[in-house]
Length: 387
Image (cartoon, rainbow, N blue to C red; front, top):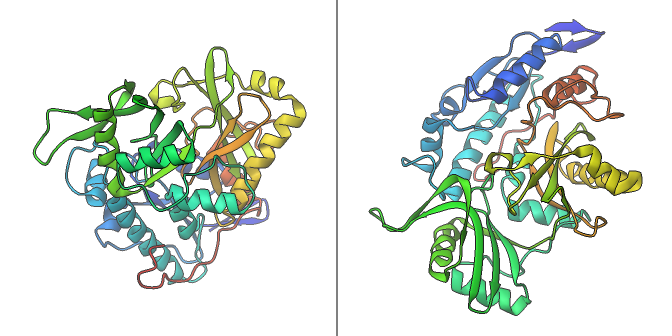
């Protein structure tokens, strides 16, 4: 271990996908911060039962499995990686891998995790995450009350009973908007906006849906019903539609990265569709224009909501908060909190955040080396806890 500025820079193990941008960028930031070259262990090796070489007295960072096809097959089973669904199986495998890492850290003297495994598990279950935020008083859109939705007919009945005509239907364990449906139902009319491409010429085993970079619209109950029926077995989270503010002819939300409790980076994600994800055609909007429209008080409130959302996960070095600004430019609501929401290449820190000139990974390394975050001590997982 090296010394930098009087503080000990500890050995680091990265759990991720070798060569993935997240791993490469964090390792680069770690080296620039004066740390020794980190060791990388692949998710596929962890999931395969291989050793997790935790350095004594060191730190362990768990990153996203990324888009590695072999890892995806281990988590969801064999099949086309772009397919929609399988989230429940993915989640069980992912949590088992997290527990293996957590137990290896617990067995290693002085080692600490940079992200609490249980908190990562909560963030990867939209239902549980929403409940945690709501219980803490963080503004979130109302969720459909009652037991989990099991099918499209039941969904329509319950939306009618609640008086909700516009909702977002989200897979409980999805990410990157996979399988998300922006749904409007008005009697016999339906409009569903989603990136899921429905494969109607049924392959063996029935219809399927695949992730697409193109957002499409379905206006037939049969198609929408097929999508919902494909997603429901893995668990659904249904939220009332939150009308978002627009700027420059596009609706937008904010991805705000909170590092060691402080909002450090923000990007405007603007789109002409309800899906603002940048990989689905969204664009980086004008943050200065959004701040000016909100005013200093409104901007301060927005950052405060993000900090409060992150405070629900105190064992996590950094989280990405998706914040929605209401169409009236006053209401605020958190759409999601992302355990791996820090991949924003080229984005430097907000003025006054302490991360000026640093990207999201540099800000995290700075927080560690400055002693503002040292990782959390862990104990082995109890059998069958599921994280």
